[in-house]
Length: 302
Image 1 (cartoon, rainbow, N blue to C red):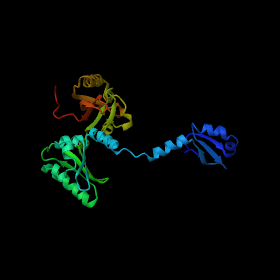
Image 2 (cartoon, helix red, strand yellow):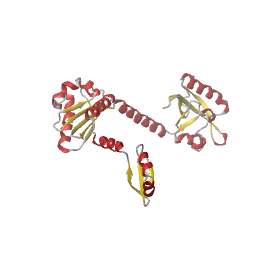
Image 3 (cartoon, rainbow, N blue to C red):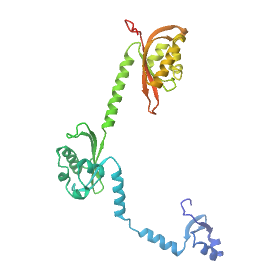
Image 4 (cartoon, rainbow, N blue to C red):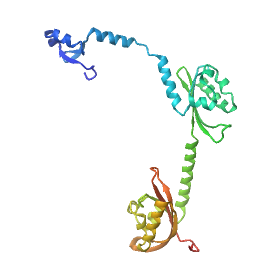
């Protein structure tokens, strides 16, 4: 009975005994009649019955729905072109109109081949023709000949009573992916260099990331290095200079590079070359990324 509309539930016996009171109550909300533990009949007013029947027969206003769809389509950056089964244009959103340089009123109902006339668009039209012939959607990345610096991800797909052509500019995403792959390559090069270790520290100078080589360099588990202050990795004689350099990096964006003695097991000291530069994290806070490696030969002097 959890799916019953809000109303009052009474037994069949109670309804018969107090019909007059329950019938008046039915003018404001349904009366659900329980018989042998089940509700199979409800008592409602004639006014409510008429209202429900009218709502059931109400036909949705397609023009209002279409207007709402137009508003939504014009708000998104995706280029959207909808065509009928003969590939005549049905709808084109604001982003696509600006890209092609047309108004919807002048091109609505026209064949797409007459709208997408520039050679840069022929590839997309042919993709729609293949989708029409096969019923299988296609998706591809595309560099427009007239704008070679821009990369689009294009999808041609079946759509109710026709087909849809969708295009998103992904230039920034592709550039970011390329940068991430380049960074991964640099990290792999660094990690493969004997005696070279890397890591990052946050805005408080605390180590928050590291390569496995850093643990080997300090002859300690990674868990004992993560979460400690970067300066504490070095001999007490160098910690003041390291702390000052970290502070200048975090507050002024000033990188540093100099020799310092590392701490390792048994408090043994080893000279190493320390390099650090500013690093801005995803939350916008500036930390630092560092490299620790063997002393240069010959030694670098200030």
